[in-house]
Length: 538
Image 1 (cartoon, rainbow, N blue to C red):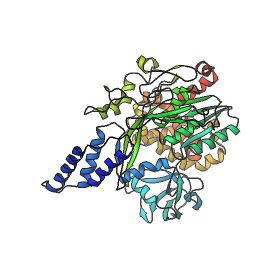
Image 2 (cartoon, rainbow, N blue to C red; image 1 turned 120 degrees about the horizontal axis):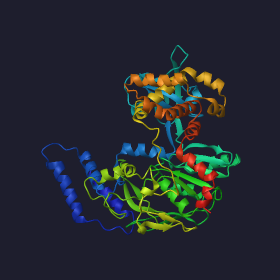
Image 3 (cartoon, one colour; image 1 turned 120 degrees about the vertical axis):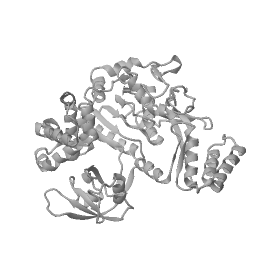
Image 4 (spheres, rainbow, N blue to C red; image 1 turned 135 degrees about the horizontal axis):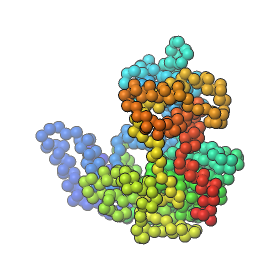
């Protein structure tokens, strides 16, 4: 296992010609310590675990984003960004130890053999998965497998007395980056991106083209909650909006020379009005796109200050399939702003983790923002003059210091969120109620609402449905609080309707319902419709 440590050192030294020579005395010290512990310690030592812990502890001294992952973690970590995995192709929800099919993936393996939304998978290869307290990970491991391999599924279907049996041939299943794409107003399109993966640029280009055919002139790009992903995907997306040779982002580090990334000018939305929606969970690649749009005065940023994750990690593969992700540089916006927030309460942007609880402080930072009032009041944020920068075209003042500040602030909406509602969601009451309702009324709803537009306009959550929510809440021992219930009722109704729309159609329709009450989305429309846009971007 010492080989793993030496591999790390060799890889790091080979990263750049500017790298310093390794400290031979330090290496010998490390080797001797590992040898002594492995061979002389009074009890038998797990050498693999020992070396892994040593690597983890070394990286912990650097920054919050330099990390170690074992081989299994590497596989799971890469899968969502690679754009596909191999499996049976269903969206599912675990309901009381049973796998409920929400939707089979369109033209996927399960849909091809006849599996339907609402089916319950109770056994895989004749081995029960229902009612046996099996973890979601264990179930997924049984459903997934190599392309073209076969798996036998036992299905319980509402209205059918006998169990049904299907043999599904596994295939590559796409993992989409886009949650939703639709016309939110006659001339305004809306696209929501959940991650920056291998297929993001292709998905976005297709969605953009479709919306433009429907008459789109303005675009709301929703990056709320988008934690980032591949740098190349961010570059490709920013290219859709910027002119040729406009700088998108640059990286620079102690041993990594400055690298500039420019727009090619080949994008298909370089002129229309553009709004970027962000919040405190928009990070990394999301911040690269947002910073570039803001610095070139290409669009208006609406929402709250982004997370502030602007460190460049280089993956270094180790012999056993494990990997370290080592920070080698920082991201800077075109105006020179560093995206990365300080590592702890005392460090500056060039600082590192210095105290025992630095990682805890870093993880606590978003909570501190809320407690300090930043997410409620725009004027609670104060920046030093040294953090000022100017946009490239209009010379507007913008600020560095960690994250991207919006041009138009939207406070976090806490009015409808109560402890009672939080318990309903945490204990699965909202999901269970929706599932039960859909199982009873699926055919009725499908016959009544042939198109989503009719459902969205006319469907309402009735008192019987709400009574079922309270009944399920009682079963879960959630104490009823009438004041909190009434306070959260509009949110509960919206979530229930959105989940039904998702089950009957897809995520696109889910977000159409949810966005009807999403404050950031509604404020974005206000910026476009009430002349605010032109007061910010001329």
